[in-house]
Length: 120
Image (cartoon, rainbow, N blue to C red; front, top):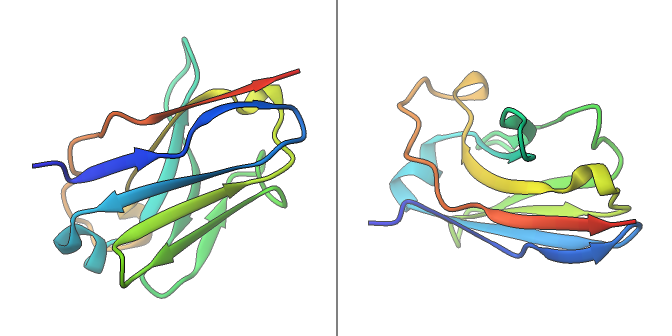
């Protein structure tokens, strides 16, 4: 059973935009804060943005003002709108729960992620 399914990545020029989507198992989505993470080659996976069930958001300093996280409670989907993309945004993007901003539930297995490549 797939619990997290990311999509929407691709190749884009610097300054461009992409919108990532993550369809989440309903039982997981309904009670958890959800977040987007990214991992560049040779680097650790970092939190990019997070949103609670109530809609409160958090952003890493590197993406503030450029990225917007949102969630559709009817579709069990979390989105990441990425504008003004930079080459340093290149990474595999993953969604998952964020226990630091919601219930301390077990983190589901990571999905496949979606590749975002920003050319200069």
